[in-house]
Amino acid sequence: MAHGTAAVAKVATPRSPYERRRTTRGNYELYSWVFMRASGVVLLVLIFGHLFVNLMVGEGVHAIDFAFVAGKWANPMWQVWDLLMLWLAMIHGTNGVRTIINDYATRDLTRGILKGLLYLAFTVVVVLGTLVIFTFEACPTDAPAELLASFCTA
Image (cartoon, rainbow, N blue to C red; front, side, top):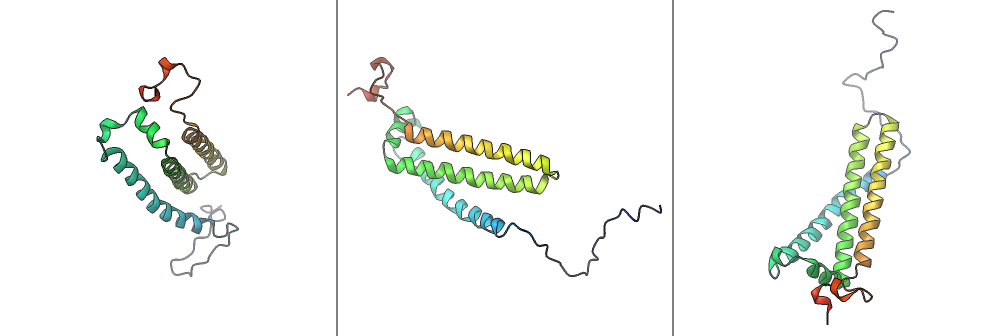
C-alpha cells in the first residue's frame, strides 16, 4: 500500500463551496445561544442588585449574618429574587459547560458521562437551593428557646 492513500479521508479544497450538513437538532443551539445572551443580561441585574442590597445598604458587609438572611427571606420578593438568581445562574452555567463538553469531548461515551454528571450536579444544586429558599424557618415554633436566635424571642 503506497502511503495509505486508501485510508486518507477526502479533504475539501480551499475554494470548494461550503456544504451545510443536515442535522436533526432543529434550532436548539440557536435558542441556547439566545438564552445565554438574555440570561446574562438578567443575571447582571439580579447579581448587582443582590450585591448592592447586601454590601451598600445599611451597615454593609458587617450586617450580614443569620438575622440578615432570615429578614430578607421573610419577604417573598427576596425569595423570588434569590430563586431567579439561583435558577438562571445554574441554567446559564450548565449550558456553558455543556457547550464546552460538546466542543472538547471527542468520544461519545466520554461526552455522555460528562454531561450526565453535569446534569446530576445541576439537579442536586437546584433542588437543594430551592428547598432551602422556600423551607427556611428562622424561628421554628417547636424549638427550645436556648437554641433560637436572639431576634426570635418576642
